[in-house]
Amino acid sequence: MASGGQGGSERTAPRIVICGGGIIGAATAYYLAEKGLAEAVTVVERHEPACAASGKAGGFLALDWNDSSQVGPLARLSYRLHEQLAKQLGAERVGYRTVYTVQVVGVEKPPAGGSSRRLRGSEKLPDWVDGHVVEMSEMGSPADTAQVHPHKLTTALLESAVTRGSRLLQGCVEGLQLEEAAGGDDTGVEEGKSGRRVTGVVVDGVVVPADVAVIAMGPWSGVAREWLRAGAGSGSGSGSGSGSSGVTGKRASSVVAAESSGSRSLLPGLTITGQKYHSVVLRPHKPVTNHMLFTGFKYASGRVVEPEVYPRPDGTVYVCGEPQALPVPSNAAEVHVEEQLGDNIRMVAGSLASCLAQAPVETLQACYLPCAPDSLPVIGPVPHCGGAFLATGHTCWGILNAPATGLVLAEMITEGRASSCDVAAFSPSRFAGGRPGNAGA
Image (cartoon, rainbow, N blue to C red):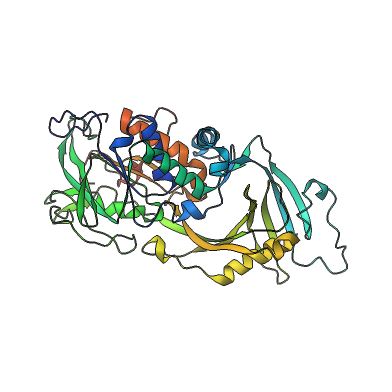
């Protein structure tokens, strides 16, 4: 899709609108800029860049922890890309460093009659982990685990693209403008078939012209199921929203809703949900080392939790936990933070490390991690809709896999295929209802 392909236009670069200013959208914009298309890119964000999980996640990176799944090759590529980005953008600027990773099992109170001393072998733990640890094991080293500050990386990626000519637009994406398309004319629709193609993105009631639309809206990306429609009686495009998606339902005057008689979603099986996590950012008074802690912790009541503790290069310590399966709110600004859950997380951290017990809380926050029905990422072109791409569903590995996702999307947009990594298993076509070849499926 190196050219716009719009009715004989001579443009050499497609007009690209990226819906979502999180780390996936930012990485896509960055790699499109690397390919010389910075001036063709507009990133649309409703609130501010990295306002959801991309700014509130932990930023832990692992080279090979996904090797047993289909995500393995993508994760390995992305781990190496994080190293490259740290060199290109500045490790201090993005909070990147390699780390030690350990698993610790702790208890709120040692067993009655037992020793309060820690287990043999705990000398491998840094001195600041001085709580009641009853088990520990090494999980990773600087050779294969690292970290990044997600908010800093997201903003650095966007700033790099914007300084080269990309545009960052604040507004609410309300739909896509589509038109009928015949296959074989650089539309992305299969030769000999009919379908649709992107001609614009509706932002606050106004159509932003586009040949390519990348939907990278995290747990709100599921709205694409309603935006991407085709079939008998459909109009020139779609612009309606969904109450659970963060989209208002407002229509641009030039857009005719595709939900008219006989229209069908191109991705009827697409459902994106969210897993909610709380986190606190603490600032201890004493330095802590680059040891990431994956924990199992047993309260005196018998309740077992598994917070994760990530010291950062800036002297803060990020701690997350308390997962919840809750409906995703309408937009990122409406994510509710429960103070009690933050207190729980802080209490566990303080039990494992006394320097964290009274450390000031700099931030208490919550976010939703996007999940597809099969727990795999959704990356690639939408079947039978030229110029439409999806990038979501990365679960807890969104920060790790963002650079590789952005790179392969940039390759798909500019070259027509992903050349750096095979991402066929993540194609949106798996949600097309099992009727390939039918534009109305």
